[in-house]
Amino acid sequence: MLVTCEYCKIKFSRKPSEIGSRIFCSNNCFKKTAKTDKTINGRYSGGKYVECIICGKTHYRTPSQLEQSKGHPACSLRCAGVWKSQNLIGEKAANYKNAKRDFKCCFCGQIFSGRKYSQRRYCSKRCYWSTRSKDGTIERVCVNCGKKFIISKSAVKWQMIRGYENKFCNKKCQSEYCCGDKHPSWYTDRSKLKDQNKTIRWSKKMCEWRDAIYQRDDYTCQLCKTRSSKGNAAVLNAHHIKGFAKNKTLRTNINNGVTLCESCHKKTYWKEKQFEDLFLKIINGKHGPRWSSSKCGGEWYAGEWCKECHAKCGLEGGKK
Image 1 (tube, rainbow, N blue to C red):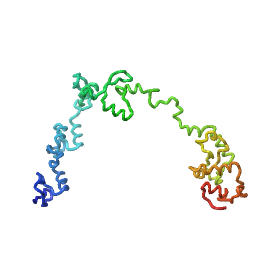
Image 2: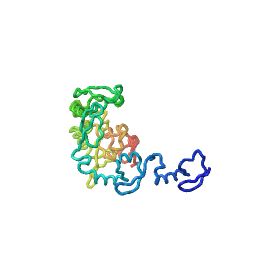
Image 3: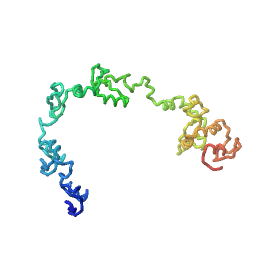
Image 4: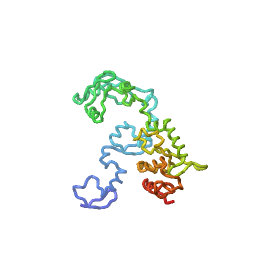
């Protein structure tokens, strides 16, 4: 059956069962029509076109939007703000002198006060939980004040899953109870809050050990022989030959340290055990002076140490 699209006027075939009140050849035509006529969209059905109370522009509003506007339809938030600034002033304003009014509790019938434009129905949480089925609630006793309060079983279930138990009737009791040594983050030994590694490394003994290593090695890197000179400052590190963490008794032993520049020190990262033999030979004096014959019997390599020791540590360089 041939039909005509309402938007583009193109004729196309369609089954009789697919023909509705409005006919479009594609979703594109439907969307373009819906921009101007929103009544064809099912989500906006039941509404009507109204005029903006401020600018007079005609716009579409759904039944829920008309109910919210309460007879004062505005086409945008800007127009709604203009209308409120002109009409909701003085005693009509929502926050005028902390405006309050009386409410009646839906459970116990008690009269209580609240903010003027709030929608409170119950005077307390106890009344709210009382309206729910008794099978779905549990009664507990507050740890701080001893009062009884009601909590839902679903809340208890999720508290058990998350590893938390509600023991207080309100947040005020929780803050009063969880203070001092009862707080979960309380530390009896305040020294645990300090960085122990940093405290040890910058202790008086470690500083004295570092100075002794520098003086013994004449403030010179023992791998590349770099040292500070005029206009060229070398950054030196005192390196532990045996690991700092695993050998606590050797931390301040002068025979367990060697002076290295910053670049050479980085070469030892994750290769400490490979460098141990080389550094121990340096400390024990097994290598001779720079231009003398090698005591370990190997030829000079990279201008300093024997080729065997040099290759073992994975250092780069060429023959001298």
